[in-house]
Length: 380
Ligand code: SF4
Image 1 (cartoon, protein in one colour):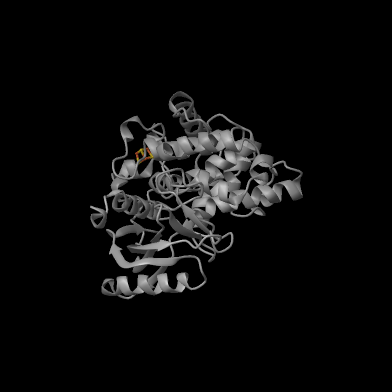
Image 2 (cartoon, rainbow, N blue to C red):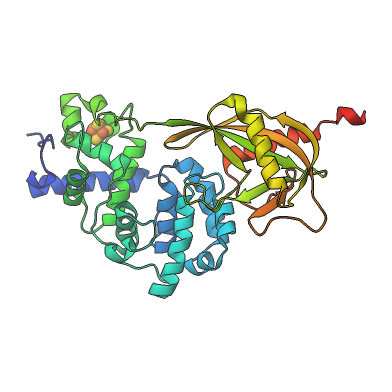
């Protein structure tokens, strides 16, 4: 007789032998075919924690190089705790969701102060660290410390919805299902095996049920509803926003950037001074106003009244669709007035900038560089 499927069942309702066979089948598949990733098979909590944080909302292919560079520069908690935030953000530059980097850095300092430099080994202690939620705590606790706790990310949620053949699960229900399924002796491998199954076999659009190690127990496969589960999430509202951006270039072509101090996505990163505007038609005058405001404290003087619009740059954040309208203004720096405190720098657009600049701002740097590289017709 065929094994019962999990359709609308709690895995705990399955006969223990059936549940054991399901677990062994998935683990055997994982042992055979898991992708060889640099953080795989590691049980040192620090690299496990770093890799899990990097992997949130980011593809494995993107993370691999960042992870290697990060571990080469910050091989342990102590090195990370000692580093300046500017350098941490620079290492993270391009990976997005910079709050993760700020939290890793903050958490390393907490670990040094409160836990003697050792990543703590209980879920509650892990969750007391900045930026560590249920998912990260569960992943580190199970993979590095062998605690039988579940993890639920997008991949796991999809696998669970399909196994029990329902379009959606509340977070509490998903966690309860995952908790019942977790392998007691190999919880870290189990959690990674379910995530890996979701990433490589039980994929969103075309699950490969024919090669799936848990197909025999899968409710959605039995009902043919794999493609319907999970039901699409309601899309978050994305707000369009326009910004006038002042790109001040001195005679040598250096560009002025300032550190973002507002709490938010880009806090601690470096960007061109900008102001939100209601309409693209007032971009130039808004950038001019910014230039006048910045000129006042003596950071620079305008070299010419020429203000040149650069191509707009669009960048999508989770809830914001931002369009930056950069305007290049030519300035001179009065001698002895290099910058206005530590939060302002002049960067050389042709060389290593040395501070973390978000991707959209890097595109503005490239656009400014292209214009500054052109011969000035007035000198012809
Ligand atoms: S049988 Fe298909 S739908 Fe079910 S878990 Fe496996 S890949 Fe996913």
